[in-house]
Length: 397
Image (cartoon, one colour):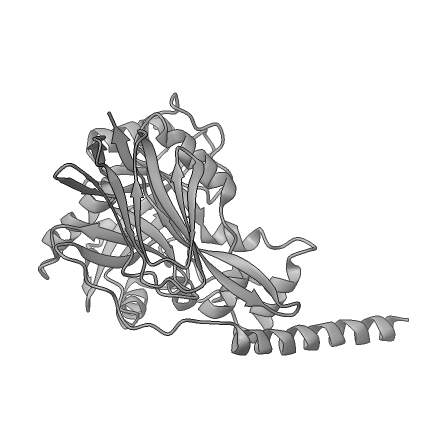
């Protein structure tokens, strides 16, 4: 009996490997060149939420900087947990083309006690006489960004009465792929693990649209302006025992999959302090969007609004007039579903359209979400993978 069970397990493992290889070869992908240029806007791609040897990660600033530079990333924000040592060690610098920016994740058991602090000042750390609320208030008073995270669980109970903060994670990759560890999804994890060692292509198996997080994000934006970002919570460090670890999923595979792309009217000029300020200012105001780039590069996406002679981009607000409209440009229109969302409700859906003009007659918080349609083996099931999640444009009377 045990021999038969082992034989079945071996057969299933081999079948998953074979099917996964075939899936990678046969899955539809769109070859596309580098970013589309658009007028006076500049776009910069990077990642948020990297842990290093300063906390529970396996990489160093130098090693991760080398990886980011090789991938052509413009910025990387490090969020080691409850340590200011990277800041004290003056690790803020540029590696190749990549801005390396130390920040910190505050991790406290208190309510709203898990958040990023990103900015210019050296933040407080929670301790015996310093609560998480004190750290958050201090950061906000200093003008730093406070981003509520989901690395330790759901940011439940958020509302207009929640203590002040800049934004929330609308996607946390570490939580996302671990959520696939149930009976019905374990095959995706096995496929990714055995075939690719968690490379970016395989990690697409584990992507799910963050429906709960987006619903919460929309609810918040109905009453206040909240920035949405994606975090990797990347450690490249799975513990196999007290002394043994495995650097998987690799930093590079995660960096290829989930990215934050900022849109700025002010271009980088090559000077670290200037470029860092441009970047942080764009993030602070929500002039950015989340891109799941594993199947298709999202660079070249642009979401603006026009009203009379005024033009604004995502994260901005605009007064409604009789000629108000949303302009949406996608870098690829083949097998793509694009949705216009107002106050959490999908008001229009477009299929395979690369340039969209949507007339606006009702105020509200408008955002865009796009999905890549892929036919996946083994059952040739067509599935929509999240591709682009924008921050809102706020239209008011």
